[in-house]
Length: 62
Image 1 (tube, rainbow, N blue to C red):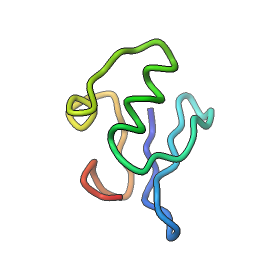
Image 2: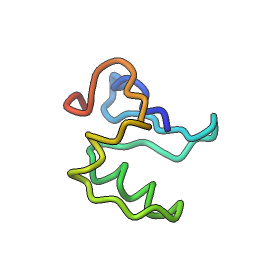
Image 3: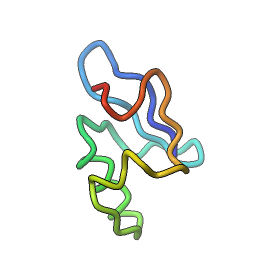
Image 4: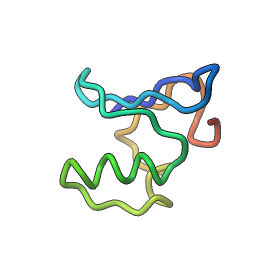
């Protein structure tokens, strides 16, 4: 999963294997994208997941 840098209008694009999942505005949004894909993960765990590639800043930047 790749979380792209924050956009100038707010939010961060999220992709898996190059396929867009949507625009996230917080960690809960990312957890929801993952839930829809079949992976149950708590929003608090999203920031620590080693398989998320945070580009243009870490999970604290929105």
